[in-house]
Picture 1 (tube, helix red, strand yellow):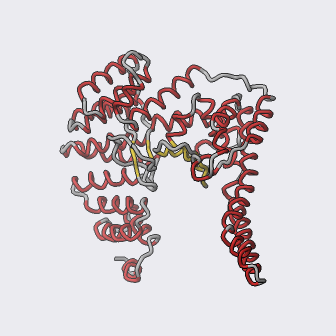
Picture 2 (cartoon, one colour):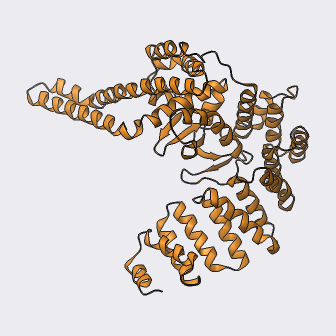
Length: 453
């Protein structure tokens, strides 16, 4: 996206999406605007749950599949398909509140208990099957052994349903505490009530891991309707931001013809015009895209994300020097957004102008103040240092990139090379040494470090 970017699971940033995703493959996406909207939606819920919003990561997963998951950290993974399917901000916030219930309730830490219980059921069923076969009942034994995984799954789902119900009730509590309605969560679950009649393989992943039932939905609705804020509506600002988020996702992830059919020229709303500008850019109609973007800037001259989109369109059209101004304006308007600084740093490094390398390095290093494990920032920084002729810092930045990606062997190799080129006992030299020591060093590496080499 502007610049919605896709990456491997471990990487916060990579090349911007320039094509539609027509399959159900999943990639991590980074987009400052969408991440900001999601946090604006979810932070009041996090606070109500006793969580520090700054410690909760929301990671966007690019796929049309409906799903959201909570992992350790805490981290909430939100599929773009879920965002698009949420009819209102309140529905999306309701699902985020449910996931917050899992995070605050420690369900991830306790999930091992469910796995152990299911494993015990599996082993017990297998044991009964073996015993039945040994007792002269091979047919019964075979049936029990064949269905061992089925019984174990039922057992685990039973455990999971308890957690799901707990998360539902917690969500209602957090929404009420934050002055919001739990109606959206009820609506979202009711919208997919039919999922309970499908077999497991044909359900959306969200409802495989979050099993629905009519009883569960009705219990949730009864509690939600009793809350004082049940009929509290979404604010106009929330509704507009939700529409912008959906338009942006559709614009980048759907084929251009599909976006243009969804957001017709007769629709003059800001989200529709935003989606069409993205569609023109993706269709290769650069001039038309830039004209549409400039029209958006007339309405919102202080919107950093429209400048970001303009920079992306120009950069990817080969107009690297022209892309600097809009990227710089985006950073000026949003100075603490690391992804915007990375894009500006990448642009400055790509201009083939040595006088701009220090500026590129400054922006990339500033981005790392916010995300010091961003491998793409380290990659562009390595290139900038290399072009500047600073081989030691270039190799250290490459070691940092490999370390952030979990490529310990490569990290160790480049850190050792950095140590050889950096002045001894400087902070950078010591950092290179630290990377070596935590990256499974060889005996030769340790010997070299021990000798002060």
